[in-house]
Length: 65
Image 1 (cartoon, rainbow, N blue to C red):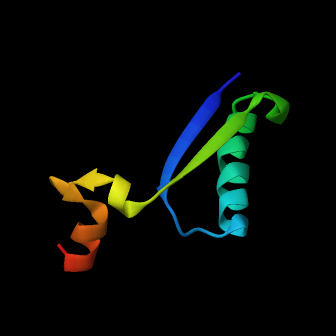
Image 2: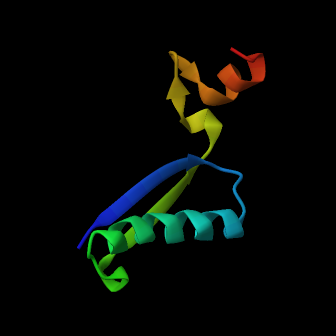
């Protein structure tokens, strides 16, 4: 019973998140796992709470680094 956690920056629409969930579930269905056994958890994370290159992603993206 796979549980897949996806960490994403905030900003995606409900439709986009639904597409992500369907796509991930489809991958496991192709491997013989019934979709009823697949759980996908999406964590929307503020860029200020995401670190990259030693800085907050909000700053990195703002500066265009």
